[in-house]
Image 1: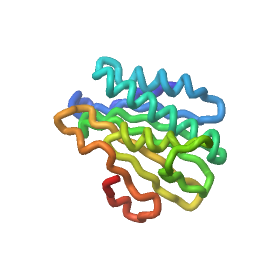
Image 2: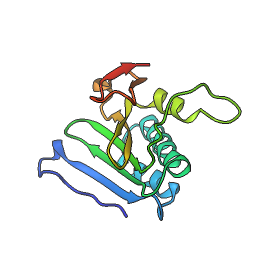
Image 3: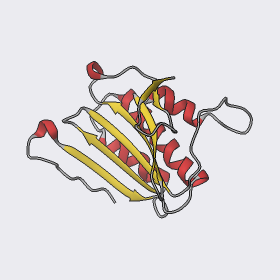
Length: 157
């Protein structure tokens, strides 16, 4: 269910979106949506965003609680590609040292995304990651938002 929604008629600030319920939507469909939204962009940006979207959506399916949703937004006006995944679990994701049980996913997100974070709400949380669409405007890689920080202040990892 791909929805392309122009925010304005001005091509410079055009936003394109994809929204889905993670219950009936496969991770493959989400990966394909990222590829469609970033068509014509640098291959590294696209493959990095595909990996991060897959990881965040997969984590919500494995560790989160229904309902779970995914939103992808290519905001050409801001020069940002944003991935947001909601789930109803109160458990917060955290970076940890990888071992035989896992722990590689958020390390991957932290390394590949321009920035990422978690916002907690009364009935759900949103884990998000952003990529700069313009390499010249790209923020330093590896910045993350502390999951427990209420105002979402950036902290270097």
